[in-house]
Image (cartoon, rainbow, N blue to C red):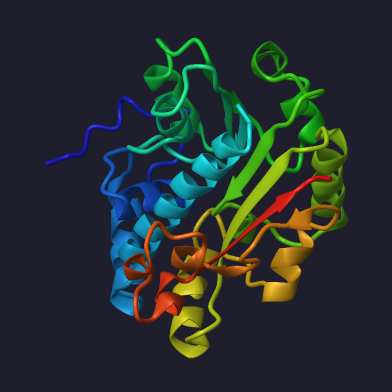
Length: 269
């Protein structure tokens, strides 16, 4: 049976796997194509824990958003937000307050189209199609201007996105631009996949990503922490995602490194 691809934007190549759509598949979503699922299954063969890792990363997102809300931050700029699945930022925030404003950003057409459809009835959440390395477009977009007051604290979320962006002066300038634009009291949330802990096997999985439209970039713990330079790192620092402020000790698995994602949060003084 031929897969129905009529819902996809015209500029999407459904034959070329994409990391956002593979991540959607790992989380059990339906906004993905046969090529994405085939590639994702190859990654699962090499690293069966990848689906659990995706869920643990999503759980970290929830706890980090709750941390922001607990500390008075009601504005969220989620860059690299991916394809909307259950447990998005605006849904998490709505469980605590009706005052939160959320701007989602992604450059992947399926992610943006799906988000636009799901957010059509959400007055306090909008989506922008743009690349993380283009901060001026993001910060000057109609959505950002309408929903976010940059003179007040904002939570900048870069969750599971930076490992798909190669090192470059452009990336460095973009990160600095965001941090300079944020008001004191703002929060920066980062999670980053890594092959540390089992490099030989996970390097093979990373190689599969390099053959997709979104290559995987390996960085050390120190390089990941450097993305938060200029902020005060919140306890417990850079840790595996399930170790970042778990609800209970029992929530941390015996081998937290199998989460495959580092997590870190910083607060701008």
